[in-house]
Length: 197
Image (tube, rainbow, N blue to C red; front, side):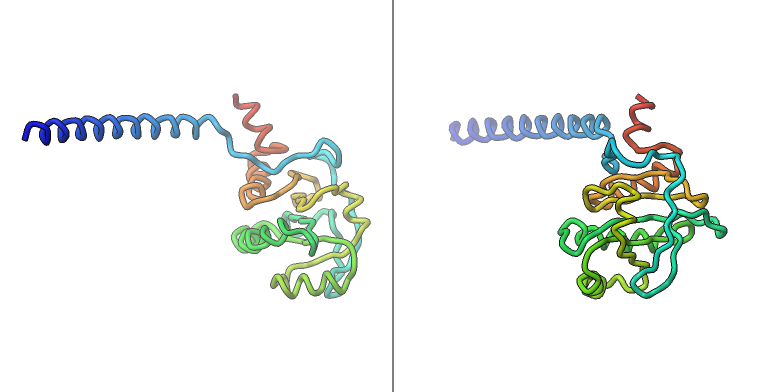
């Protein structure tokens, strides 16, 4: 009987010790979470500078609508220019977030998708991904003007045609960091947090 009581006491001591360890780890996770700043879109060193006017190009989308990409807008709306490709798996996974952001931010922003290459492949991509209704431009000149070297790449232009944020966007968080950078008036969230530290 004493062996059973001793083993029971030892088990309770172990359970209490384990509970203390779990509480300590939970506290450390909270501390770590506070120290790690959210990761925004990855800014590349080359390319356009945030704060300068974006290049203006007159293009037609896949539906034949004329667009003046990068120009100042009379309606006071911003433009998210997202460069994608039918062969880019990350681009495909990001499209759900783009559609959601387009809907959530519709009060102040329009989305234009851009790519280059074979028009037939682009049309298949639009149909397969359910992108009808979103302006989709096929233009190598647009990618060169914005110096896009990797995909998916986004540029957020304000109502005056000024570049407000840009970078590689691999996730919803990266995409939303562009909106937050514009709201805060900084080039990127990394710049904001490095200035706040």
